[in-house]
Image 1: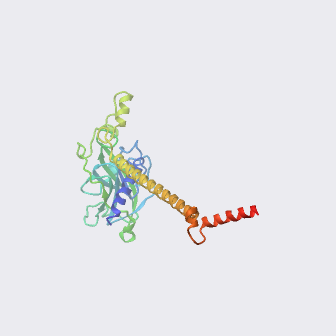
Image 2: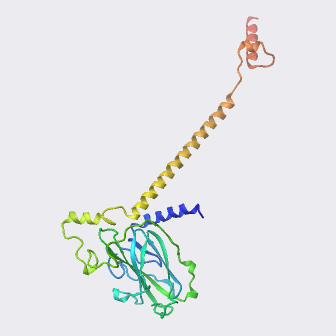
Image 3: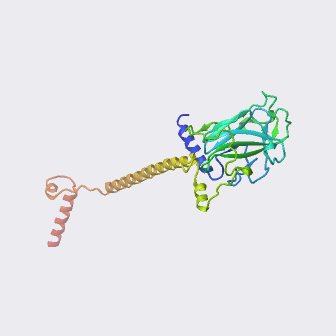
Length: 301
């Protein structure tokens, strides 16, 4: 397993880099969530411009939820609604009693144990019931201040016996780099961009707006996704240089070998006249000399 670890880390970094344009700081990895929108990811209850779509089968007991993140996310609260199309936060009931303190960049999987608690919303649900699972969390992703983000996954409940746990891509592989948590604890309220209760994002002119929107993750520093992208780019670039160098080396050696083989086929042992006259046998020089002398005699005759 040890040789596979660098490959896994590289794959995760590549995945984070590739997902940076179509997800927020965190998202559902399974069950699949609604399409992400930068303009609505801070809008309750689902942070998406799309409504209910295809519903994924989710077990009534023993269920698991997989997350993917490209930036540190905090205080993730999971909730569930049994409405066909939830429209407000009041439609949701907490699915877990304790929020997830932190989601690190990478992949995280959590178990939803509904069988051990009669107070779980799933305890009294019936198979075939449509539901929407919501994640609400805090991050300072694309602005210098904390924000509340929302995401929803639409499911249909099925008996645990009819569900195959192997269908869930559940694994934990996240970046352990410790990033300071946002200054606000819990879900911040009254901050710019946070729904109808928050003030406008910018009260100044257009230049100020561009500077704020360009900031990210704590005042202009590189996000974890950007760092991961830089690392992957460096690794791939180095591997490309090494690979090209190896190919050039092999091609050069091949050409040198071909030249040696060609020259070996043309090699003839030449001996000077003095050596030729003093040696017996059919030396090329002596034979050539005899031919010349015989030619002279024929000409004189």
